[in-house]
Image (cartoon, rainbow, N blue to C red; front, side, top):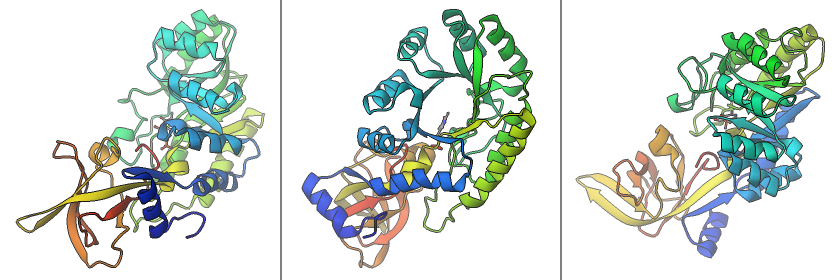
Length: 364
Ligand code: PLP
C-alpha cells in the first residue's frame, strides 16, 4: 500500500470492522490533489476554493481547512457547515444559485461574499445591501463537461448572467453603489478538452476592462478539472494546462494594469479518486447466461451511474485472482436502473465477496 492507494486487505479489514456499505477516503490523496494544483498553476496570487458540493463530509472539510484551502459554498447549509468546520468567513464564497430572499438575508448575516448569478438577484441584493462588495457570476457561453447534465455554460442553461448583459450588471451595481470585487464563470464538470476551459476564461476576460470593472481583486474560473474514471483513460496534463492558464491570465492582468488574484473551484479533482465505496455481494443469479450480482448498496449511496450513466471501476477485493467473468453488478433498490455496472468484466464473484467501487469520492 502506498500513501495514495489502499490495498485489498486494508479495505477488507475496514469492511469487517465497520460493516458495509462503507465509504472510505484517502486523506493523503485529497491533500496531494489540492496541493498539486498550486504546482500546476504557478500564479502567486492563486487561491483554491474547494467546491464542497462535491463532498461535504466534515472530516474532508476539516482536512482541507487545515491545509489552508478556501471553500465554494452553494447553500446556506454549506456555509454553516464550512464555518463549523473551521473556515473563516473570508475563506468562503457563496455562489447564490436560485436562492430565496430569506436565504439571502440569512447568508448575508453570516458575513460571506456573495457570487450573484442573475440580474434579478443582483437588484434584490443591491436594494437590501447597498454599498457592499460582491462577485458576479457570468455565463461564459462555452458548452463543455463530461455529461450533458453537468454542462453549466451556454445560453440554454440556468447558470450565470450572459456576458452580453454586462452593461446591465454595471447599471444595477452603480444604482446601489455595489463594489464588484470579483468576476466568476464556471463552464462545467469533468471537462475533457482543456481548450474549452481556456475559451471560457478568455470569453470572461474579454469583457473586463478598468472602466467597466475598476475594483476587481480577483477572477474566479470555477471548477471542471477532470480525473480519469476508466483505467484506460489518460490523465490530463495539468502542468501543461497550468502554464497556458497563467499565460492567459498574465496577458490579461497586464492589460488590466493590476496583478489580480486567480481563483479556481475544483471539487471532483480534489476528492473523486480518494473515495472508495465498499459493498458486499449478497445474491447471485444466472438469468439465461446473464450473471447478476446483487449487492447491499444502491443508488441511494452512489448516484452517478444511474444519473449520468457514469463509469466507475469496480474490483473484487476478496477474490482478486478469480477468473474473469461478466456481470451486471446491481443495487438493492426497486428500480431497474439501479446498477453500478452492466456487462462488466471482473474477477469471479461469489456470494459474500467484498467489492470496491473506485473514484467514489465526488458527487456520490
Ligand atoms: N463551481 C461551481 C459554480 C460549480 O457549479 C461546480 C460544479 O458543478 C464546481 C465549481 C465544481 O466542479 P467540479 O467538481 O467539476 O470541479
